[in-house]
Length: 128
Length: 372
Image (cartoon, rainbow over all chains, first blue to last red; front, side):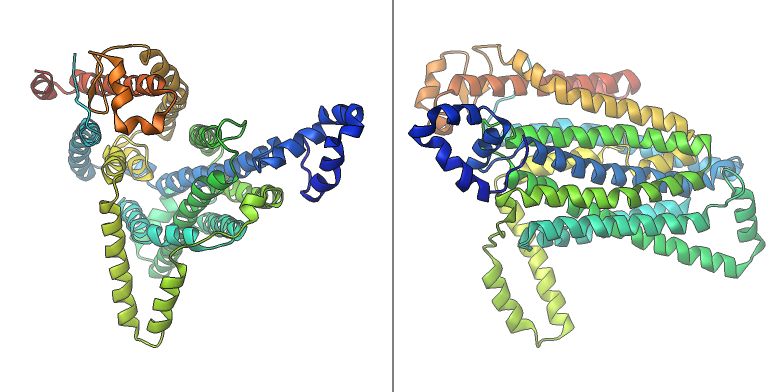
């Protein structure tokens, strides 16, 4: 499972495949070293590479997500107790209505877009 | 309130205007490692600086600290107000930078690194496998990160929350850098410089334009944007891609703007976190449920339509269809998968409509019209 530099493929890989060292060769072929050689042969990805990739991606998304939420709660933390006045409640009502309308509009989009998508692919949409 | 709404709008507008440029840069730069590492560094730099600036704005004494700050504002201390406004603008600029670098990072990782480094189809770490794991990692972060931050903020105070975010970013930078470097070191496909087709053509244009004025450069830039739009709408995938982006029109998506709104309406941060977490759980569940559901529903045979052909009469029609050349060997399986997708999608849409009908009696009429 360990990573092998490409240079070692030429050094180790070829003697293993020679018919004279077949017995030794089979022993080594089942070892992790040989596994990594065969993985490198098709230029794919090894397990440790994938783990490193996942870790890097995890740290990126984790930091982005935490900052996103922390920024919102930090900017809003200052206004928590300000919401009591009546003057604001009317504007809040208006905003709620706008949100509701937006939500209705947004909810009507997916069926419409799905219809667009399906009609583009020459499907017929049977509701049965 | 207006300030936070305004900043949200400015951030979104900036990302609309500039993210295509970031995408172009990710596409064109030949060294993949350099691209990814620079997006990571810019992102961390902006997060850490913004966190430090937040520490100045958020009052240290109480958990909310509104009284003192708002009192100063109303009392008319212009200097502190100007300083605070300046810091807020700086945070806004850093937020834009953070947003852009995050999208650049996502593009570089998901659209470039994963695609290039993945093994061929059928091998253990092929593109499908890597994509699904990447998506799951993203969703899990989306689930856990807000819960953690909101727990920290409610147990301690906003200041500590900001401090934790900043220090986590600083601590993870080195390790993240090292991980990316290790992947690159052992993968010859990633190391190979990217071949850029349009490069020589554009290079020639740029050379010709260099002595010209700033205005001609901007007009060329705008023309480039227009050309991008033309390219987008001339491709066959524009309808599905546009319809996918419409999904985010729904105000129910827990974006920063929506959370700001909910907080201002009077919902508590804890309640919003719980609601958001529930949404994320459903999202993660769907990554498991969808393949299972599609597989199960694909067993339905001899009904529906597949690529314009009626499936109810005879399956052998598929063999004559020229569009199925791509699906050689397994036309049955592919048609089954598409049937499964079709039926699962239909269920999803019907379910959404039913949910709406429960809450909004007005829509009853609309639904009746649709189903009749």
